Each structure stands twice: as C-alpha cells, then as structure tokens.
Length: 301
Picture 1 (cartoon, rainbow, N blue to C red):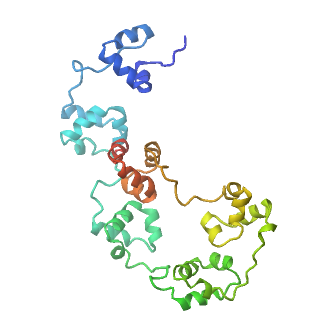
Picture 2 (picture 1 turned 120 degrees about the vertical axis):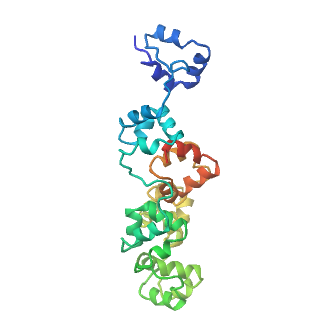
Picture 3 (picture 1 turned 120 degrees about the horizontal axis):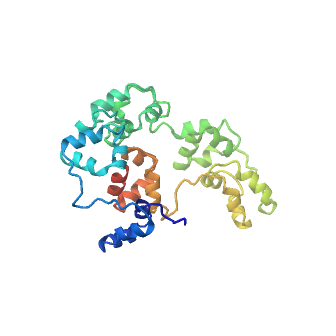
C-alpha cells in the first residue's frame, strides 16, 4: 500500500502539529509500528552531548556553515554557544565577510578599485551598500568622474536650450528626460515647449487598436499618462488593462508585501544589506512587521 508519508521524518516535516500531539501522548512509537517506519527520535535520554572535540569532528564534514546547519543544527548551536565556531569552521572558505568587516577604511580602499559608482555597485554591492548607509559614499568615490549632472545643473535656460532641439514632448523626453523632468518640477514646461507642435488626436477617433499601438511606446503608466496620448481614453473604452499589461509596475499595491512574500523575496539575497538595497519595499515591510529576526535566522545572515 502507498502511504502519503514514507518515514517518520517525512510525517514530521509535513504535519508538525499532529506530530507533536502524538509526541506528547507518547504515541509515535506505536504509529511507526503500524506504518512500518523506523522509530528513531532524539530524546533527553539518548541526546548527544556536544563537547568541543565532537563539534570539531562534525564541522569537518561540511563545506559551508549553511550545510552544517541543515544537516546537524544541534552541534552547530553548541559550537556557537561555547565560542568554538571559528575553530570548527577554519577549513571553510567564507563567501561573505563577517559582520562589521566593512568599516570606513575598507570601503574607501574598495571604492578606489572602480571607475564608476555603477561598477562598484555591480561588483561589490555589500561594500557599496554599507558606504551609502553610513554616509561615506562621497568620500569613497571622490576619485570617480561623474557622468550625471551635478545638483542644480538644470537651470531654466539650460532646459530651454535642450528642448529647442526637439519638435515634440515625446521626442524630448526620450532623448533628454533629465531636462524634461527638471522643467516639469520647476514649472518651466510651457515656456520650454512653446515652439513644439501638438498633434492631439480627437477623442472620438481613438480605437482599441490605435490605443494598443500608442501604449506600446511607453514602459510605465506614468510615462504614458504624462507624455503620451490616449491614456484616459483607454480607461473610458475599457481596454486600459490590456493596453498596460506590458508596463512595469513602479510600486506594489498596498498590502502586497505579506509575510510569505517577504520571506520568498529575502531568499534571493545572501546578505541583509543586499536585501535592503535590492528590495526596499519588502525590507521595510519586514522591519515594520518585526519579521526581520525570523528571516535572519532562516537565512543565517
């Protein structure tokens, strides 16, 4: 007969609540006998006492701390608790630096290896994140020549000079969106675009097919709404969802980051710093709901 569970271990992993009910009633041995499973559980009577020598021998079996934790968490906990972990894992090559490794001096030295901030972020996101978080980024990257314009660069005259090169807003946005956004932020948009010709299609000429073609020009709903045409007509005609299904959602809806989604998102990153930088929404929700300690324990950060 094919049973749902092949062993007591499978049963415990899949149905913890019922497992512990049977455990407290001392009925597990009888269950194993009825199911034909091997009865082998650790009790206070037969539990191994992990001294230093045993922990050293056990630690040598594994190539990483996470592998040790997965296979024998009891011995790992004993090594940690008694301060033997470093000695027990000296044969293991660390992929991540220990907590507190990236101080200001090391971040400055690391930053000097790169010619651009994006290059540093791509190749050593952890060091970059620590420098950013602690306010050392400017000092760590003072040798880097900035490709982006400094704060305050986009004056009214510079925005007008940029806009004059283009015949419509869409073209200007695609080729120089920094100047375009500066003109909107400072309410210079009308003056900057007064030479541009507007080819606005009357609402009664918009069809679903034309709206789909127009929507494909834009990667976000915000771009289409602010720069393109037909956004509100798509809403009125009831084809808005179809027109925007290819667009990137810039922000998750309220309530999106549930505990389950936060845990799944955290699994993508091997450090807490990477999680914080790469997925700010999930990280903030995790901290706000006090799930961060559970995630740290699960991920062994």
